Amino acid sequence: MLVASSHILNKDIKNKCELFHRSLPVSIWKIVASRFIIGIGGFIVVSLVLGIIHYLVLSLLFLFNFPIKMDWWLGLNGFLLGWAHLAIAMLVAGSINGVLSATFKEYQNMYIGLGVLGIEVVTRTLNYLYGLGIPSLFISIRDLVFSGFYDVQRTAVGISSKINCITVSGLSESEVMLKAVQLPESFLSGMWATLFSWSIGFKLLFAALMFVLATAIYHRREVTF
Image 1 (cartoon, rainbow, N blue to C red):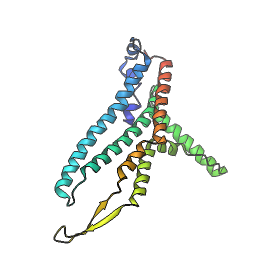
Image 2: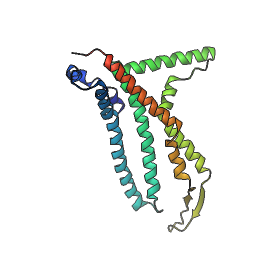
Image 3: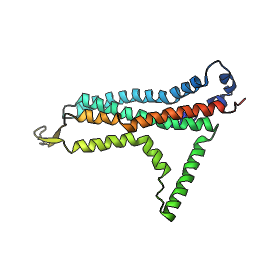
Image 4: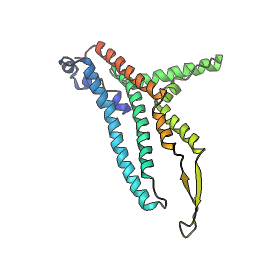
């Protein structure tokens, strides 16, 4: 998705059909929106389909090879919650790439890589010499994209402190001791709450702003013949 979204507004240049598409009686907003939907949304849908297949296969394997009864509903919620946070991360990362694709006609990955690396070197140097405490651009981008997973982890750790474990024996001839977990009644609601937060709202707003910015830049960009 990262590779594909970095070229979503430059494929016409490679295929030598940008002038043709830009001259069609279709608004620039629809053109850019269609590229975002396919270049980002398409991969989100594919990840959902592959995730469902993966979940079904693993469920069947555990059904015949695991001595404790599976909680299918809990597993399904876990998969869907993980996919939802992944989809938001892909949306944020893809929207950033969309702006880069509109700004640079080629080599945008190299430009952004060198740019982030250069800013990171300067930032670390200034912090080391003068103790300024300037935040890292790389860490800021990473946290922006993946903070949803961090929220899930913190929530799970907080809930796990309230989990009651019951020791179960006699499940096999070797008297293997396994533990059955009793989750709090608010476990699922607490985990799903990570998807409805100000952080997620900010990410969606950020992706929308990146779409508007990419459209504005692409609209003013010189058409390649």
